[in-house]
Length: 209
Length: 431
Image (cartoon, rainbow over the protein chains, first blue to last red):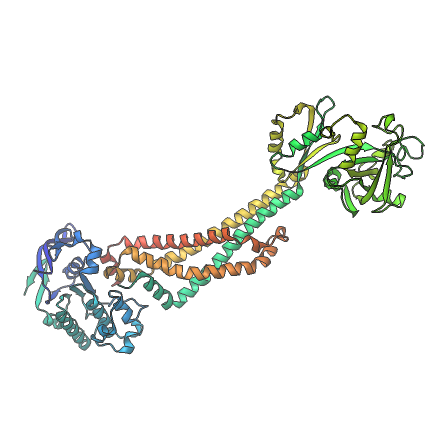
C-alpha cells in the first residue's frame, strides 16, 4: 500500500493559470523520489501540498489511504511528514541537539552522531556551524521524527558540490535504513542520480521514470 | 516533542539582550504604574482628609415661634444621621463673677448688676465652637473643654492678664439679683470653675461703644456642658435631664462637607421633630472657597494616572507587537514541524511572563524604595502621607493583571496576523 497518494490533484494560483490538474501519484516507503523541473513548473507547490502546508484546489491527498484534510493538516504535519528545506530552517537560538529535540524530546546525541556531528558540535549554537553541518542537523531532525515521509525542498541548493553529494548520500542512506519515503525537489543531476523514481515536471505534465 | 515551557525558557536564556531590555522596560513601566496608582490613592485620601479638615457644619436653632426646643433628646436623635461625625451642643448663660475685671464695655465701672458678668458659653466640645472653627479664637495655653469635663472653664488672655489668672486657678461665679436669665429665687447660687485653658483672640469682631461688656469677644468664658446641666436643674427643678435645652443650638459636623445638602435634606424628612420649629443654617463657606482647588487636585491626579497607564500599556504593547512580528521565521519553522499555532502563541506569551515575573518583584521593591522621595517631590499635598503605605495588594494586583493582559493581548494580536497566513506562504516569505 502506498504511504502517500494523490488523486485528481489540481492546483492553480488564478483560474486561468493552472499549475497542474488530474495529478495521480503514488509514493511508497523505503523509496527515494526526486522531482525535477524548471523553476515555476510546480515542484515546490506539489511538495507544499504533500506536506500539508497548503490545500489543493481539487482532488485529494491520501496518507495510508486516509484523506489528509480529514485527518487535520496540523496533526498530519506533526505525525506523518517531516521537512528538509534549502535554507535549513533551524531554530537559531538552539543547539543542534535542541533542534532535534523539537520533534523528539528524548532524542539522544546518537541521532546527530549518525549524521556526522561531533560531541562538541551538537551543543554549539547552530549559527556557529557551517552550511553543510546545519543541513545535517536539519536531516537529523527529519530522521528523528516518527513521520514515515521526508519532504526535502532543494536540500543541497546552498551547498558546494562535495558537501551536496555527502548530504544527499546521508539523507538517502539513513532514510532507506529507516524505511522512510523521501521526496526531494531538486535541480541537481547528482540528487537525481540518487533517486529511485524521477518525476519530471513540464508544462503541467509529469513524466515518471 | 519539546515542551512549550522549555522552548520558551530557551528563548529567554539564549536572547540575553532582548531579555534584559524587556526586563528593564517592564521594571520601569511597572514601577511608574505602581507609583501612579499609589499617588492616585494617596491624593484621593489627601483630598478626603483635606475636606474633613476643612469641615462643614450646620446648626439647628429653635425659632422664636417654634414649640419644640433643641433639647437633649433632639441631640441624641440627630447625631445618628448619616455623614454626621461630631456634634456640639451649645448653651449660653450669664453669671456674676465678683471682682473679675473684664475688657471694658458699656457696663464697666457703673456699679450696675451687669458689671462683672461675662458671657458663659457651655459646649460639648469648645474646639468645635464656631469662633474656634473660624479661627477668631485660638488656644493659647492649657486645653480645650471636653464633653467629660465638670466645673472647668477657659478664659481669654486679656481677662487672664487683667486678673492675674492662669491655668489651674479657680473662677468663682454666682447668681445675683438682676443677672439675665435667673429668677430672684436663684440668687445665691454659686459655682466654681477650674481654669483649664486660655484662648487668644486672633480675629477681632466689630463692637460698637454700646456693645454690652458681656458680649465683647474677650469676655467670653467657655465652660463645660455638665455644669450647664447642673445649673439647668437649679433653674428648672421639675424638668427631666432629657429636657435640657441647648439654648444656642446644636452644631452637626460632617466628615465630607460635599455631603452637606444631602444630609440637611435627610434631616428635614426625619419624623421625630417639627422642622418648622427650627432654623437650620448651613455653614459650608470654607469648603465652597476651596472646592475648586480640591476638584482640580482630584482631576489632575486622575489624569496623571490615566496618562501613566495609557502610556505604559501603549509602549509595552507596541514593543511586544513589533518583537512578535519579527519572529515570522521561527513561527513558520515550528508550524512545519507540526506545532500548533496555539502552542506557538503560548510559548511567546510564556517567554514574556518569564521576564515579567522578576520584573514585577523588582518593580514592587523599587516602588517601595522610591515612594517616599517621589511622593514628597511630586505633590506637596502628600507631604504628611507615606506613599509606600498606598502600594498594597490592590495596586500590586492591578499592575500584575494589567501587565499579564497587555502581554497576552499584544502577543495574540501579533500572532493572529502571522497565523492567518497559510504555512506555505510563511515559509515562502522565509525563503
